[in-house]
Length: 496
Image 1 (tube, rainbow, N blue to C red):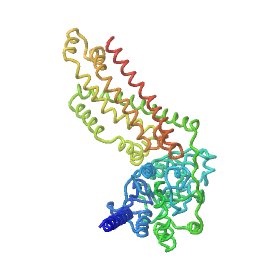
Image 2 (spheres, rainbow, N blue to C red):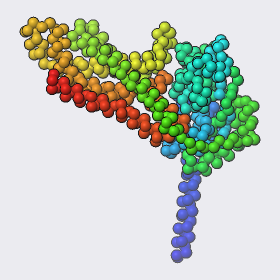
Image 3 (cartoon, rainbow, N blue to C red):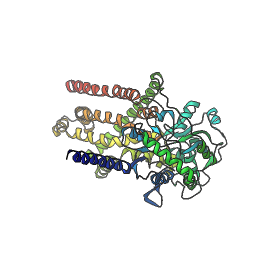
Image 4 (cartoon, rainbow, N blue to C red):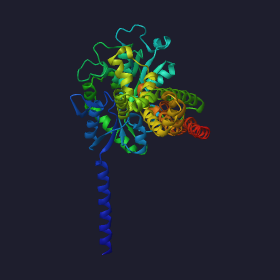
């Protein structure tokens, strides 16, 4: 009887282990990629926005068959792909990810599935330079994506650059806004934007004859699939699948479909490049000055935007309180409109949209940032001022009138000084909020403190060291605002 029970127990354990192993191998792999600016890797189908297409979408489907395991697409912000793999939110990340020493610190990578090169492009007819070295010698600005091989190369060569979060930005600025004189990105991206094929054309910034290549491609690199360092068995399985796709010719067919195949790819059939992880981080003495530069930009945008908000907010409040009906309506409309739209959308319009509608009104990145935040926060300031002024008892107006004081003098000498005591705390809170909100200006190529943090961490800086320094700078700049507010409240409350 005992032997029978032991046998049954053993069989149950084996069956359970087999079932668990089968469930693990058939569980969908969570694949992270970013549809925002992910061309030609992954993007929405222009003919059917419900569908996802792209060269890596096709590659994922081919890998799915080879692995015998479903691959589930997860929309994930590009900057967070490798941290997502590190945390275990994603099983794999594949989005034109470069196999570099910096990226190897954060994740394991499969063998390369594509060999890319960098390509410099200019506007058609540009004759001032035909190479990246000539652009450097002439002091011209080049646009690129932050944290990429192209970004690091521009830094290494000392070339003035504009850094963007997504792929459209540098091309729009090159073709329509003349804010950069060239764009340096991976050749697959460049080929997609420059392709005459309507299925590969990107309508937001494409126009016939708009681009020209400046010199041949250069600076080779490799794309790979990122996997958590604790899951090397998955790396091995993916490597086998990639080899099979090469042997069957399916890998070539996928890249040929997207006009990305070239003879350089055959080199990956016979050899695998050895890219070793480096443990050398960015020294504090190197990244601290860059963070200080970013902090100065943050402070400048905050102060300038708040001044604009104050200048706009007070007239809006007075129009709402004392103006005739048309002015009251316009003030209400302004406040509701700018409180109702995201500041991110406003920045996009001021930087990209305004230049497209009226080229004469083209704004620089800092100008667009200050105007956008100033207009947005003016709506909130107007409501704060309106509430503060309305809180002063009507008897104050009547007493001043009985003494023969005109309304304008009454407002300046009696009403406004008292209202400021009410206005000051929420106004200070808005200033602190604005100070932190400036982090979104990175979308229009402004390198402020938080953007500098992102760039440094992508370029090999440690998340902890750079992150703690960035947080310390934010605290050093924001905490004194609270003390200043309390000081002014006490001073004006006592002596007012």
